[in-house]
Amino acid sequence: MKKDIQKNQNNLIDNIKEIIFSARKSVAINVNNELITAYWNIGRIIIENEKVNNIDNSSSRQIILELSKQLTDEIGKGFSRSNLFNMRKFYMEYPDVQTVSGQLTWSHICELLTD
Image (tube, rainbow, N blue to C red; front, side, top):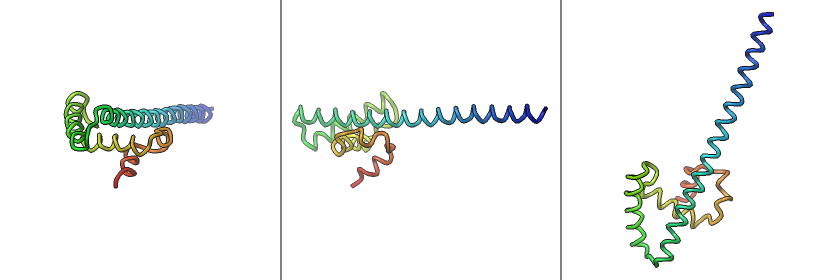
């Protein structure tokens, strides 16, 4: 009888662990997708700002440097100059974010963007 209780307890634990691990995986995937979409949109608004204001490459670089400083001060990590340039390039090279958002992490995308 005691073996049956222990086996039942082990099954219960295994089922609960499976639910937790599945939920954690789902959360990680959703966070990744949301970050990639956000980064793509940041790249989009940078490019749109350049077009609307007829900004040249030199001025664009300066704007991105200032954006990096201000966003890092106000929001925190993740908005380095190189990361903002990657977001800009990401939008330019992948006009349809849906083609990559569910399949790659931001690190993988940055590797693809490397010249």
